[in-house]
Image (tube, rainbow, N blue to C red; front, top):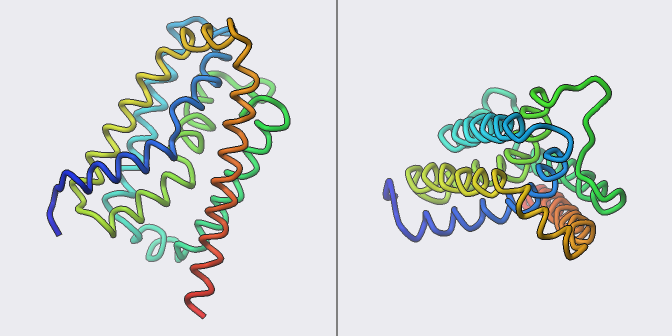
Amino acid sequence: MELFNGNDFFNSFLMLLALINPISKVFVIATLSKEYPRGEVNRVVFRSSVIAMGILLIFGLTGNFILSKLFHVELYSFKLAGGFILAVRGYTALNKGLFFELSHGQKLHDASVVPIASPMIAGPATITASVSLQTMYGIGSVLTAIVMVIAVNMIVMLFSEEIGNVLNRYNLMGALIRITGLIVCTMGVQMMANGVLDIRLLM
């Protein structure tokens, strides 16, 4: 297997980009921009991006080792649990029109780790994909794809306020949040179905 292959990189990039879904972060950051200074929100975007990239690179480098050897967790179990979390988060957005709320007393700085860095960027789906892709493609292709996708996601997040203003002007924000929530929920259900299928194949 080649260390880096253009096609492998492109396939990995597209899959991770679809799973991270930068547009879904626009709604989160645009909401925060209304309540906090722009500079503070930008620092949160940068910090959460660095943390998320670190998480995905670790899993991309080690593959299934951390899950199976260190935590004794099989990939299908991770798919089931991760899919459930993703489905619940998507349903929340579909039902309430938002992906998360800061808990009472929670600081914005803390939110850059949970839930923005993880699970919203480096969530169950993207971690599982990083592990799976590492076994399918060259490690160089996957790691490069992770860095590029996080960079694209960060750029979109940094311009969330401007994008959000355009969407609000045409009253599209609420509808798009719910549509994105439906997609995220569906991805979670699909991930759980894949986990069940993996179990059946082992029987």
